[in-house]
Image 1: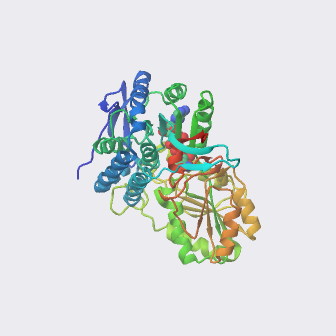
Image 2 (image 1 turned 60 degrees about the horizontal axis):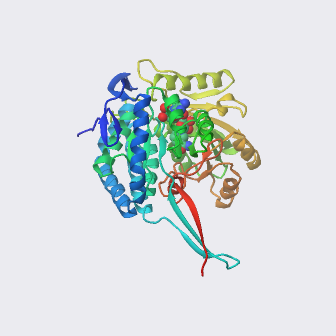
Image 3 (image 1 turned 60 degrees about the vertical axis):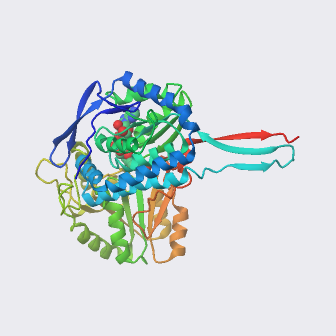
Length: 477
Ligand code: NAD
């Protein structure tokens, strides 16, 4: 199996060395996988110039041309799925089943936006007073900065590149420093799919903050699409305010799960395991606060603990592994600290909560019984830790679930659809899953409310993050 290992920057259709290099690590043993190029500020400026020079022609290109490039990228990515999954697993640490799932999910954004590229809606109407015609069209917003996190190095990149290509925008992709190799592979795919030079550029700046600040203050930059923590998102919103740059923000989560006393545990447990353990819990959608109703609480905790204890922790690429490493020792230690604080505050340990020996960034599957004021409920855990709280009434569960600044996704488990929809409608989140552990889908609008973000990716909304609406009023003589 050939794994494409690009390690350079991609500027104006050329793979180029940077000003210096940084190591990318395999978090399962902290060995170096590769050294990748880091861009100087002037190379970041070169990327802006390249994307700007390509912008006019690319915006005018036929939607069908853009659609076929995306379709080709989907086909290449699908045929190289195992290689991409292996690279994701190596640099991110996640288990191969998770990496394969991510690679397939990521490729689907290219297929979905290949289909969307030729379906941009418009409008032609008579004004209510009859004095004119109202013509509404959508145009590419222009040069876009795409910033992605380490937890889904493929999926978060294609979820932005797909709609930007479909809309006719040029781009500069800035992947996470921990996981740039997957992003470089995806850029290589776009090159092979026939994307013209300058349309997509990739930089990994030596100094992230100052480089992105420079970009957001360059008048040629029109749009920022960011996925990452709320903390960094807030900084970037302030930076983007100076030039009033359009922002799409996919930020942190603190997902609530409400398990009602009429939930079918045979459905609930496997689905909850998906919501909690996909990616080893390092997902913005990961079940973070699990509220279970008292009559079924003991049975639920015992079955959850049994299922969680079956996870096999190890190097992501080992065939037996179902729980891989965190991306780095730093991230792993953050999880340990959150759990230790929770236990010190009175959490009951049903499973795990002990650091393993050895060098890898591993944290074991953990189940905690906690009171509703335990500090773990205020953290995005980003690890394989399930804190469980017992509730009595639906009203109490709704109030506890909404008691957070975040609002990305909620999960509801009940055998009564009416009851589940009643709770779903009360959830302060951009997405709600009913009796299901994963609802992310390229064909559905993904995004949060409150401090989980602004805008939506995927679905019919996704392309509009890269389009601006133009109204043309026409006098009919
Ligand atoms: P992060 O915010 O630390 O980093 C995200 C990206 O921003 C990285 O590329 C990083 O290099 C870059 N960055 C960091 N500081 C910057 C600065 N000052 N200026 C510009 N760029 C900067 O997040 P992370 O640790 O990589 O990812 C985990 C976070 O991402 C979690 O909070 C998770 O919930 C969130 N996330 C959200 C979604 C979503 O769709 N809502 C999806 C995946 C991850």
